[in-house]
Length: 352
Image (cartoon, rainbow, N blue to C red; front, side):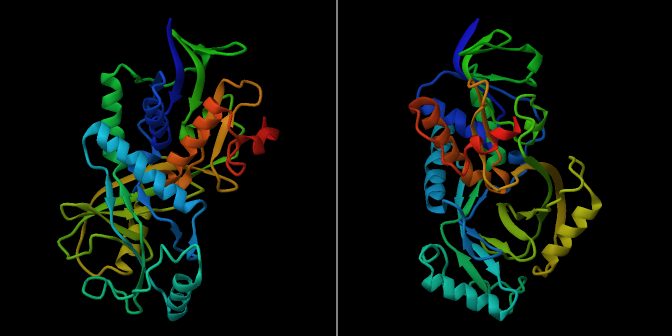
């Protein structure tokens, strides 16, 4: 019988950040996962402290940005590769009123002054981008290359004999008062970081996690474009070597992993709304984001089986949310510190 302190089920961005935290704290663990479909694996990985639709600050934005840089910097150091790319986000204005609102918030709103630039002409030198009214620049933004990070980290865990490539079989789980036994592994706690797949988890399936399908494109173009995210109707993000990420759709009605021509055309139309140059679609992907009814993560212990732990609901901002939610969860598990009430699973205990 193998003995570990933790089993982590799921190796998306949340499960990987949890595993990194346990590595940093010298805790023993094993990760179990073989789901090909991870929202994290195809996610843009953008980190942006501003809600671009309303020009408002993201919940706990400053703390999230700081921890993101620290935690994903740890991945870079451990795996000796670059994953963090810092570059601005440009939001193309739709009308003069949006421009006025942006400038007002950039100069007077205390939560936004550090994140919104008053400069509005950064895209004027790019002939292929339509922005007749200008654009707002968001500062302290960029992307984390989650696609390669998750693959590289999995390979690292495999080499350390800390990864099991299989679907978690709940029929093999045995629970006693203080521990959990899965096959030949005895653990103090099992952390379920399964994303949308938590709805197939018999212990957490009643949580109000809502699947939202997202389809994305990778395009290739020789056009001159800035090293920045450009957000019009859709967003265009540089990936290097003349390739760009385009996304993403939000489909609550057809929650599956199938690529559709409708979504492809929707994204192409969205890009052409502001990008006037030739491009070729080279890839299309679909996945399902785990979102929550109140737009907050769900972390904490099962009300009956305290050795079963939920780490879920990162939604569309998993790159920013995962590091701070992992800190909260770890401090709860190891130091008996309270979880942020807005993310605490206890708000849904009536579902069990």
